[in-house]
Length: 412
Image (cartoon, rainbow, N blue to C red; front, side, top):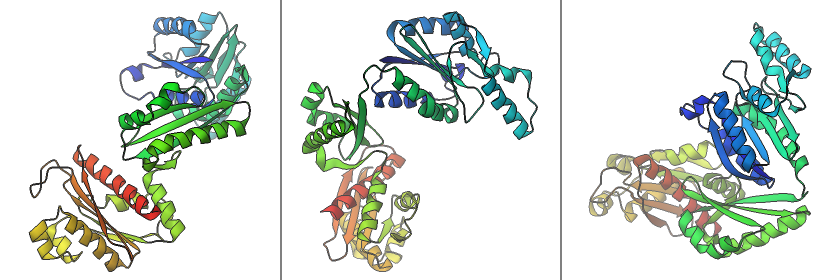
């Protein structure tokens, strides 16, 4: 089955809101083996929407419309589709009662135009809206399938998950299991990763392998189809092994995880505590860590030592170290990591010092950064980064690299 997603709303064309619905639906459809070849955005204009429908019918078996189901005059999606298909609009009693109940509960006056939201295309399967008022619809005419969904994501997403996705699955001829797994990589670019597995990408069929650049990292989605769920999982296992034979050094986790979450899992599993000395990151490492619940047993505290004076007085960095090597140095990073660990009595000390930018410091260009890692009873290590990007981008990537390097050290 091939699908096209048609988003309706002039506000999308004006850039007032982003078309996140298309992204969500594409991900959902990919998981069940439906190919999405086109995204279309059309304004609140019946003639242009009519042309978009005709075009979509020529290239898709399933057309999913989002938006334009509300009570106002410019909400014209179902009117235009009904007219195009030669169907009437009829009032759905269950939807109407939901709308009436909503206004009664909220103590608001229900205007006549709100009844418009209960109108559905004749012959359509109604998709209940449990988070709003306008119901969705699904209908099949000959070999074409049409689905109408509300525009607000908080209404559309749960509706599609609970009612829309099963309706599509019922129409698929092949009752195959579609299983997928997302692998996460850091410290390698999308282009380099794709080059490392180029022969796999060139010959893929089932399972499929799709790399995607993310927020300073790369994800790889492996998707397999088989009538047996167990067999599909085995196919994914085998493909994951092939991929990680090439780029496994950079692999750190699955699904919606992050470097920080994976680091915290290891710290909790090993019952380790950590303290941080942060110069250029200004507390960002600790902020990201405390954004995750349950870190109080792991993060003991830290010091934001932005100035040279604070490095000397709060973190006990030797004056000779700063005079002879500077704060942008391996020696300074090592002392910061060791000293913060000893000052706060933790198992791990981590430090961040360097040049966020945009100006240079001590003759070092922006993006020159040292990360120090001190583990109890092990030699302290320092890692040099040479980043290119904005000031805040460099700070964010520095924190990610800190998590990445510490994860590697703890797993060795």
